[in-house]
Length: 88
Length: 207
Ligand SMILES: [Zn+2]
Image 1 (tube, each protein chain N blue to C red):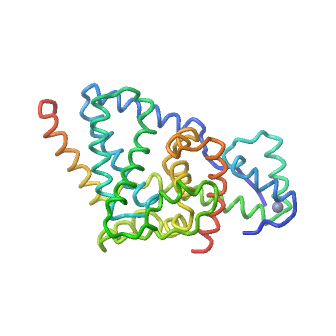
Image 2 (tube, rainbow over the protein chains, first blue to last red; image 1 turned 180 degrees about the vertical axis):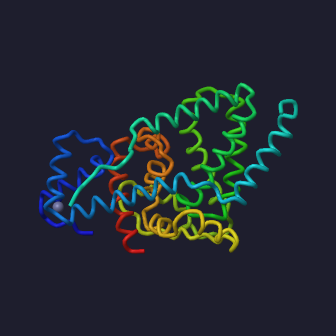
């Protein structure tokens, strides 16, 4: 993507991750929010990044596919049965 | 156009996870079988996700899971620093993926995706072929596991960036933990994460 030469958009882009992570102070947040009210391109980017990050976080909590989980469970049982027969 | 911040990012979430892992390791080391089983399952889950999402070699996943299982079991028996467990686990899984690639006989060198990324520094190593040769049944499982659009978009990222985004966004590691696993500074993690997010967004728009 080519963010244009508009220095305000450039500054916006540089701070956007920190903004999305809640790492910016109130003044910096305000500046970004104000900019996004007037600049639909940056506003779209912020929304897009937010969606992307949300999808990633969702994917991170996806459980293993069931057959894979079953095999993983069986491996654990085999390991604990032969390595540690006393406890169980 | 209204702009709202992300719901999370709960700043203490990754700290809690790290502490949660540490408690599980300590309990498992103390003979709590349930804790041991949960820890071993988590280790295998991490190995599965890392194999598929970072390395892009689904056919390696279950071997890497076995490796993570055995090494975690041994780690617990000689536990030193429960707090360091999570960083240790991701480093171990990353190494297992690399070793696995090295052992692949007759496979073209360009498939060693993480290696390329590691040496790529902050430059832009071109797109890397990370498609695996998994069996059809596995591919069906994978397709139903995580959004195909997201997986395709991840493949478009340079490997070193892909690892940062997966560890930070999907696995919930802290910036410091990611820095330790990737062997780069925290500032570098932040820079790469920012670029990776933007690249990922654009890749998502293209698929
Ligand atoms: Zn703008």
